[in-house]
Length: 76
Image 1 (cartoon, rainbow, N blue to C red):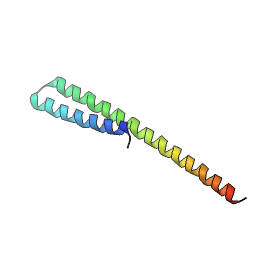
Image 2 (spheres, rainbow, N blue to C red):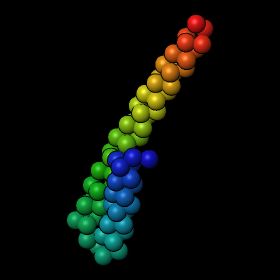
Image 3 (cartoon, helix red, strand yellow):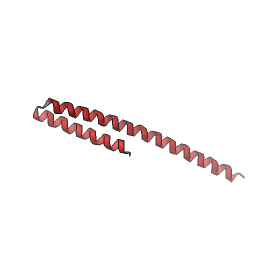
Image 4 (spheres, one colour):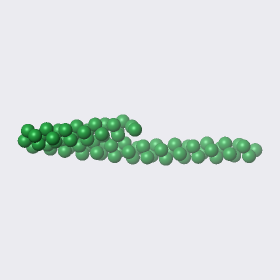
């Protein structure tokens, strides 16, 4: 889990809370701010998820390269 995923989850939760508070108090601007914060969190979390996918693929490629090099050297 990376910082974007954590911040995204935090913003999503904060946004949901703001929306609930806004609905309970009848404050439409608080509801709107909550929706915006939640949307920001979804984007941050999506960015974090994408970064994790890239990092995992990069690690797998590096591992394959190391495995190939070990195999190549063992054939000598």
